[in-house]
Every structure is written in C-alpha cells, then in structure tokens.
Length: 58
Image (tube, rainbow, N blue to C red):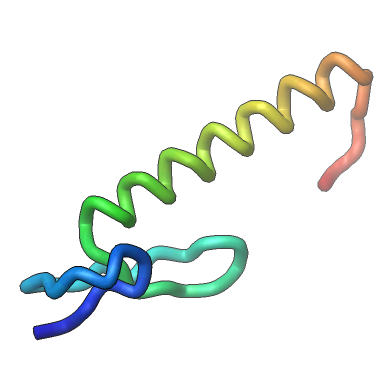
C-alpha cells in the first residue's frame, strides 16, 4: 500500500499535486487541503498587491 508523504497514512491511491513548484504524491484529503491553502495564499497576495497599487507581474 502506498503511503501519503504528508499524513503518513497508508492509502489505496495517491494523487500528484504541485506545491510550491514541486510535485508531491499525497492522499486525496491532504491534496485538497494543500490546494485550498495555495488558493487562499494567492488570493491574499492579490489583495495586498491591489492595496499597494502594484501593477507589474510577479
């Protein structure tokens, strides 16, 4: 049985997720949690850049 690298649980299937530029094999629960965390981080960064008037690219 494969093991999730995040929670160390044995799972039936691993999902590949790109986190901070690296591909990681995680269980579906951990993949969803990290995907949501990434989306929140992007949204908050966008709000901060908007408040500061940043017009360039990242």
